[in-house]
Image (cartoon, rainbow, N blue to C red):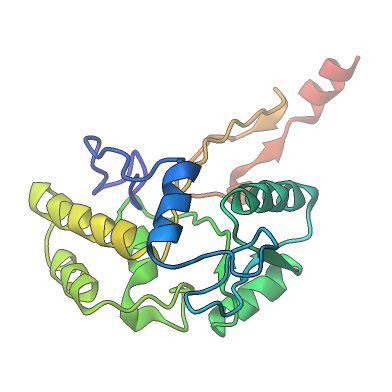
Length: 217
């Protein structure tokens, strides 16, 4: 519903979904703007009957293959031909930085509890850095720069909401989910505490050999 996830400064808990799953409405919009099946093969062409195909980058894991199958199933349902560039994740990241991916599924893990970390990912001046969508909208850039000058509070959250609306309208991203992680630890692990913004906390951990030995007996 918005780029700033729950439990992060700038999240708007009152935001309502602006997108919904509606294949019939999608087909109607494609028809309206001239994306027709010109040759009768079940897939649409561009207005003027030029070829149309969408390519999405996909990693090579079993999970990514399953997600790609779901994407293809749903794009087939509205008559859009979809292909996949299957590459290891590091190679996809390299291609994204070079602007060589048409689409890619990607998440973001912030190290700070502030929405700027997420909204900055579509800031125009960060193309070639972490703005992999290469989105560059002057209106959005202006709002982002204005928000950076404000402290956390209602005024800044209102600007974040305007920026979110622009992302939905121009669609450099199609926002899908916020992940929730569950972590299991053994009783002989010492010093473990889940941290919302520190994913790699191994240096704080240790093992109690006596507890481990007792648990295994």
